Length: 121
Length: 121
DNA sequence: ACGTTGCTTTGATGGATGTCAACCTAGACG
DNA sequence: CGTCTAGGTTGACATCCATCAAAGCAACGT
Image: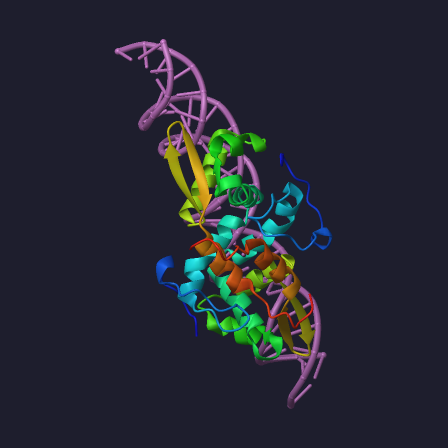
Protein backbone atom coordinates (compact mmCIF):
# COMPACT_ATOMS: atom_id res chain seq x y z
CA UNK A 1 0.00 0.00 0.00
CA UNK A 2 2.26 2.79 -1.19
CA UNK A 3 0.37 5.76 0.21
CA UNK A 4 2.96 8.50 0.47
CA UNK A 5 6.72 8.50 0.54
CA UNK A 6 9.54 10.01 2.53
CA UNK A 7 12.71 10.66 0.55
CA UNK A 8 15.56 8.31 1.24
CA UNK A 9 19.15 8.42 0.11
CA UNK A 10 20.07 6.86 -3.18
CA UNK A 11 22.79 5.00 -1.36
CA UNK A 12 20.24 3.09 0.66
CA UNK A 13 18.37 1.89 -2.40
CA UNK A 14 19.22 -1.73 -3.09
CA UNK A 15 19.90 -2.26 -6.76
CA UNK A 16 16.31 -2.85 -7.72
CA UNK A 17 14.53 -5.78 -9.26
CA UNK A 18 12.73 -4.92 -12.50
CA UNK A 19 9.65 -2.71 -12.28
CA UNK A 20 7.53 -5.45 -13.81
CA UNK A 21 8.76 -8.11 -11.44
CA UNK A 22 7.70 -6.71 -8.11
CA UNK A 23 5.96 -3.67 -6.67
CA UNK A 24 8.24 -0.68 -6.37
CA UNK A 25 8.06 0.70 -2.80
CA UNK A 26 7.05 4.34 -2.51
CA UNK A 27 10.33 5.37 -0.91
CA UNK A 28 12.35 3.83 -3.74
CA UNK A 29 10.11 5.50 -6.32
CA UNK A 30 10.65 8.83 -4.60
CA UNK A 31 14.40 8.26 -4.57
CA UNK A 32 14.70 7.23 -8.22
CA UNK A 33 12.15 9.46 -9.91
CA UNK A 34 14.46 12.51 -9.91
CA UNK A 35 16.99 10.58 -12.00
CA UNK A 36 14.37 9.77 -14.64
CA UNK A 37 13.19 13.36 -14.46
CA UNK A 38 16.71 14.57 -15.14
CA UNK A 39 16.83 12.36 -18.24
CA UNK A 40 13.42 13.64 -19.31
CA UNK A 41 14.78 16.56 -21.30
CA UNK A 42 16.20 16.20 -24.81
CA UNK A 43 19.14 18.48 -24.07
CA UNK A 44 20.09 16.60 -20.91
CA UNK A 45 19.67 13.26 -22.64
CA UNK A 46 22.09 14.35 -25.34
CA UNK A 47 24.47 15.79 -22.77
CA UNK A 48 24.37 12.49 -20.90
CA UNK A 49 25.16 10.59 -24.09
CA UNK A 50 27.95 12.95 -25.10
CA UNK A 51 29.54 12.61 -21.67
CA UNK A 52 29.12 8.85 -21.36
CA UNK A 53 30.30 8.11 -24.88
CA UNK A 54 33.19 10.56 -24.86
CA UNK A 55 36.68 9.12 -25.36
CA UNK A 56 38.20 8.54 -21.94
CA UNK A 57 34.76 8.61 -20.39
CA UNK A 58 34.81 12.32 -19.78
CA UNK A 59 33.86 15.47 -21.66
CA UNK A 60 34.86 19.11 -21.24
CA UNK A 61 32.11 21.71 -20.95
CA UNK A 62 33.95 23.58 -23.66
CA UNK A 63 33.14 20.70 -26.00
CA UNK A 64 29.56 20.27 -24.84
CA UNK A 65 28.33 23.85 -25.04
CA UNK A 66 29.01 24.57 -28.72
CA UNK A 67 27.07 21.44 -29.71
CA UNK A 68 23.81 23.24 -28.90
CA UNK A 69 22.15 26.46 -29.92
CA UNK A 70 21.75 27.37 -26.27
CA UNK A 71 23.49 29.86 -24.04
CA UNK A 72 26.35 28.86 -21.75
CA UNK A 73 24.34 29.42 -18.57
CA UNK A 74 21.57 27.17 -19.86
CA UNK A 75 23.97 24.29 -20.53
CA UNK A 76 25.54 24.88 -17.13
CA UNK A 77 22.08 24.69 -15.58
CA UNK A 78 21.33 21.37 -17.28
CA UNK A 79 24.68 19.97 -16.19
CA UNK A 80 23.90 21.00 -12.63
CA UNK A 81 20.59 19.15 -12.87
CA UNK A 82 22.38 15.99 -14.02
CA UNK A 83 24.92 16.44 -11.23
CA UNK A 84 22.25 16.84 -8.56
CA UNK A 85 20.46 13.77 -9.89
CA UNK A 86 23.61 11.75 -9.29
CA UNK A 87 24.05 10.91 -12.96
CA UNK A 88 27.34 12.73 -13.53
CA UNK A 89 30.35 14.03 -11.65
CA UNK A 90 32.26 17.22 -12.35
CA UNK A 91 35.93 17.88 -11.84
CA UNK A 92 37.89 21.04 -12.48
CA UNK A 93 41.39 20.53 -13.89
CA UNK A 94 43.11 23.80 -14.52
CA UNK A 95 41.07 26.00 -16.78
CA UNK A 96 38.49 23.46 -17.81
CA UNK A 97 35.76 21.46 -16.10
CA UNK A 98 35.29 17.83 -17.05
CA UNK A 99 32.12 15.80 -16.63
CA UNK A 100 32.01 12.05 -16.18
CA UNK A 101 29.07 9.63 -16.05
CA UNK A 102 28.29 7.69 -12.89
CA UNK A 103 27.42 4.20 -14.14
CA UNK A 104 26.04 3.01 -10.80
CA UNK A 105 22.81 4.94 -10.96
CA UNK A 106 22.44 4.31 -14.69
CA UNK A 107 22.63 0.61 -14.02
CA UNK A 108 19.92 0.86 -11.38
CA UNK A 109 17.61 2.64 -13.80
CA UNK A 110 18.34 0.16 -16.56
CA UNK A 111 17.65 -2.71 -14.19
CA UNK A 112 14.33 -1.21 -13.22
CA UNK A 113 13.19 -1.03 -16.81
CA UNK A 114 14.37 -4.50 -17.73
CA UNK A 115 11.63 -6.60 -19.28
CA UNK A 116 11.63 -10.34 -19.55
CA UNK A 117 12.39 -11.21 -23.20
CA UNK A 118 9.29 -13.39 -23.47
CA UNK A 119 6.67 -10.74 -24.18
CA UNK A 120 6.45 -8.92 -27.50
CA UNK A 121 7.15 -5.24 -28.07
CA UNK B 1 26.70 18.36 -34.13
CA UNK B 2 23.27 17.90 -32.58
CA UNK B 3 22.12 21.50 -32.78
CA UNK B 4 18.34 21.33 -32.63
CA UNK B 5 15.84 18.54 -33.12
CA UNK B 6 12.60 17.94 -34.96
CA UNK B 7 10.29 15.46 -33.28
CA UNK B 8 10.04 12.08 -34.95
CA UNK B 9 7.76 9.19 -34.29
CA UNK B 10 8.75 6.62 -31.73
CA UNK B 11 8.12 4.01 -34.37
CA UNK B 12 10.95 5.33 -36.47
CA UNK B 13 13.43 5.10 -33.65
CA UNK B 14 15.66 2.09 -34.14
CA UNK B 15 16.05 0.20 -30.88
CA UNK B 16 18.98 2.23 -29.66
CA UNK B 17 22.53 1.30 -28.78
CA UNK B 18 23.51 2.24 -25.22
CA UNK B 19 23.89 5.94 -24.42
CA UNK B 20 27.49 5.39 -23.46
CA UNK B 21 28.36 3.52 -26.61
CA UNK B 22 27.59 6.08 -29.24
CA UNK B 23 26.32 9.64 -29.54
CA UNK B 24 22.56 9.88 -29.28
CA UNK B 25 21.19 11.85 -32.25
CA UNK B 26 19.12 14.90 -31.38
CA UNK B 27 15.99 13.54 -33.03
CA UNK B 28 16.16 10.32 -31.03
CA UNK B 29 16.74 12.27 -27.83
CA UNK B 30 13.70 14.39 -28.60
CA UNK B 31 11.64 11.29 -29.26
CA UNK B 32 12.66 9.41 -26.13
CA UNK B 33 12.95 12.19 -23.55
CA UNK B 34 9.15 12.36 -22.99
CA UNK B 35 9.18 8.72 -21.87
CA UNK B 36 11.85 9.42 -19.25
CA UNK B 37 9.98 12.54 -18.28
CA UNK B 38 6.83 10.51 -17.72
CA UNK B 39 8.77 8.20 -15.40
CA UNK B 40 10.22 11.20 -13.59
CA UNK B 41 7.43 11.41 -11.06
CA UNK B 42 7.19 9.15 -8.00
CA UNK B 43 3.47 8.57 -8.45
CA UNK B 44 3.81 7.62 -12.11
CA UNK B 45 6.80 5.40 -11.35
CA UNK B 46 4.73 3.52 -8.79
CA UNK B 47 1.76 3.36 -11.15
CA UNK B 48 4.02 1.95 -13.82
CA UNK B 49 5.32 -0.69 -11.44
CA UNK B 50 1.85 -1.60 -10.18
CA UNK B 51 0.63 -2.02 -13.74
CA UNK B 52 3.63 -3.92 -15.04
CA UNK B 53 3.86 -6.23 -12.05
CA UNK B 54 0.14 -6.89 -11.75
CA UNK B 55 -1.03 -10.48 -12.14
CA UNK B 56 -2.05 -11.01 -15.76
CA UNK B 57 -0.01 -7.98 -16.75
CA UNK B 58 -2.87 -5.58 -16.31
CA UNK B 59 -4.33 -3.47 -13.52
CA UNK B 60 -7.73 -1.86 -13.03
CA UNK B 61 -7.89 1.84 -12.22
CA UNK B 62 -10.17 0.87 -9.37
CA UNK B 63 -7.19 -0.94 -7.82
CA UNK B 64 -4.65 1.77 -8.60
CA UNK B 65 -6.46 4.82 -7.26
CA UNK B 66 -7.00 3.73 -3.64
CA UNK B 67 -3.27 2.94 -3.33
CA UNK B 68 -2.52 6.66 -3.14
CA UNK B 69 -3.69 9.57 -1.04
CA UNK B 70 -4.56 11.46 -4.21
CA UNK B 71 -7.82 12.35 -5.87
CA UNK B 72 -9.25 10.29 -8.72
CA UNK B 73 -8.73 13.02 -11.30
CA UNK B 74 -5.09 13.31 -10.33
CA UNK B 75 -4.47 9.59 -10.82
CA UNK B 76 -6.37 9.79 -14.09
CA UNK B 77 -4.13 12.64 -15.17
CA UNK B 78 -0.99 10.68 -14.37
CA UNK B 79 -2.29 7.66 -16.25
CA UNK B 80 -2.98 9.86 -19.24
CA UNK B 81 0.59 11.09 -19.09
CA UNK B 82 1.88 7.51 -19.12
CA UNK B 83 -0.47 6.70 -22.00
CA UNK B 84 0.67 9.69 -24.07
CA UNK B 85 4.28 8.74 -23.41
CA UNK B 86 3.61 5.33 -24.97
CA UNK B 87 4.40 3.46 -21.77
CA UNK B 88 0.96 1.97 -21.15
CA UNK B 89 -2.22 1.06 -22.99
CA UNK B 90 -5.75 1.40 -21.67
CA UNK B 91 -8.72 -0.78 -22.47
CA UNK B 92 -12.27 -0.47 -21.24
CA UNK B 93 -14.03 -3.76 -20.46
CA UNK B 94 -17.51 -3.19 -19.19
CA UNK B 95 -17.51 -0.96 -16.18
CA UNK B 96 -13.79 -0.90 -15.56
CA UNK B 97 -10.72 0.36 -17.38
CA UNK B 98 -7.60 -1.79 -17.42
CA UNK B 99 -4.07 -0.57 -17.98
CA UNK B 100 -1.29 -2.65 -19.43
CA UNK B 101 2.44 -1.91 -19.84
CA UNK B 102 3.97 -1.63 -23.30
CA UNK B 103 7.28 -3.49 -23.00
CA UNK B 104 8.64 -2.24 -26.33
CA UNK B 105 9.37 1.28 -25.19
CA UNK B 106 10.55 0.10 -21.79
CA UNK B 107 13.08 -2.12 -23.51
CA UNK B 108 14.33 0.79 -25.59
CA UNK B 109 14.86 2.90 -22.48
CA UNK B 110 16.57 0.05 -20.66
CA UNK B 111 18.84 -0.51 -23.64
CA UNK B 112 19.79 3.13 -23.72
CA UNK B 113 20.89 3.06 -20.08
CA UNK B 114 22.79 -0.19 -20.35
CA UNK B 115 26.35 0.13 -19.12
CA UNK B 116 29.15 -2.22 -19.95
CA UNK B 117 29.75 -4.38 -16.86
CA UNK B 118 33.45 -3.51 -16.79
CA UNK B 119 33.32 -0.18 -14.98
CA UNK B 120 32.52 0.13 -11.30
CA UNK B 121 29.37 1.66 -9.82
C1' DA C 1 48.22 43.99 -11.17
C1' DC C 2 45.45 43.67 -15.21
C1' DG C 3 42.75 41.76 -18.74
C1' DT C 4 41.01 37.41 -20.90
C1' DT C 5 38.77 33.20 -21.10
C1' DG C 6 35.84 29.35 -19.07
C1' DC C 7 32.20 28.25 -16.31
C1' DT C 8 28.76 29.05 -12.61
C1' DT C 9 25.38 31.79 -10.06
C1' DT C 10 21.70 35.15 -9.75
C1' DG C 11 17.49 37.41 -11.22
C1' DA C 12 13.73 37.68 -14.20
C1' DT C 13 10.17 35.76 -17.19
C1' DG C 14 7.11 32.94 -19.91
C1' DG C 15 5.49 28.44 -20.11
C1' DA C 16 4.74 23.72 -18.25
C1' DT C 17 3.13 20.76 -14.38
C1' DG C 18 0.73 18.60 -10.19
C1' DT C 19 -3.29 19.00 -7.72
C1' DC C 20 -8.15 19.43 -6.63
C1' DA C 21 -13.25 20.66 -7.11
C1' DA C 22 -16.79 20.56 -10.28
C1' DC C 23 -18.70 18.68 -14.15
C1' DC C 24 -19.33 15.26 -17.81
C1' DT C 25 -19.56 10.51 -20.15
C1' DA C 26 -20.08 5.55 -20.46
C1' DG C 27 -21.95 1.14 -18.73
C1' DA C 28 -24.76 -1.60 -15.72
C1' DC C 29 -29.05 -2.47 -13.57
C1' DG C 30 -33.78 -1.79 -12.43
C1' DC D 1 -36.01 6.13 -18.72
C1' DG D 2 -33.64 7.00 -14.30
C1' DT D 3 -30.00 6.28 -11.34
C1' DC D 4 -25.82 4.70 -9.57
C1' DT D 5 -20.83 3.89 -10.13
C1' DA D 6 -16.19 4.15 -12.54
C1' DG D 7 -13.34 7.25 -14.96
C1' DG D 8 -12.15 11.03 -17.67
C1' DT D 9 -12.34 16.18 -18.76
C1' DT D 10 -12.33 21.10 -17.60
C1' DG D 11 -10.99 25.09 -15.11
C1' DA D 12 -8.37 27.23 -11.67
C1' DC D 13 -4.32 27.84 -8.93
C1' DA D 14 0.22 27.40 -7.00
C1' DT D 15 4.50 25.70 -8.01
C1' DC D 16 8.19 24.33 -10.84
C1' DC D 17 11.21 24.66 -14.98
C1' DA D 18 13.85 26.11 -19.28
C1' DT D 19 15.86 30.00 -20.91
C1' DC D 20 18.62 34.17 -21.21
C1' DA D 21 21.16 38.57 -19.73
C1' DA D 22 24.02 40.23 -16.30
C1' DA D 23 27.11 39.63 -12.74
C1' DG D 24 30.47 36.74 -10.25
C1' DC D 25 34.39 33.54 -9.61
C1' DA D 26 38.56 30.89 -10.93
C1' DA D 27 42.56 30.01 -13.55
C1' DC D 28 45.83 31.41 -16.89
C1' DG D 29 48.77 34.91 -19.60
C1' DT D 30 51.11 39.22 -19.82
